[in-house]
Image 1 (cartoon, rainbow, N blue to C red):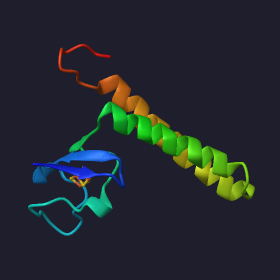
Image 2 (image 1 turned 90 degrees about the vertical axis):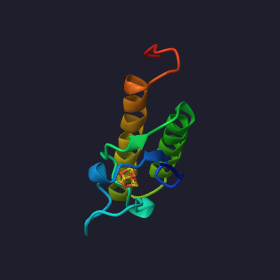
Image 3 (image 1 turned 180 degrees about the vertical axis):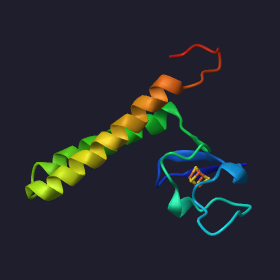
Length: 100
Ligand code: SF4
């Protein structure tokens, strides 16, 4: 079963034995509101990778107009989003099997 999780910008290809969102035991459905970035059930489309980069750009823009500690956190979040998008680019699977 595949679940769309627009909040986390992922597709969840749910296999309960791999799920990281259940702290209190195994369930038959994912806890989409507790999605964990390193979960092995995560899949992304190219469009979702682009959405991550758009979010990163917005965060970096906001970081320029807030006090430094807050700005630093926003920039760190933006960097994490860009790394997730870059990971998608490095590991993406295409219909014809080509890497990019
Ligand atoms: S952590 Fe995210 S990707 Fe993993 S099973 Fe839970 S909702 Fe799905």
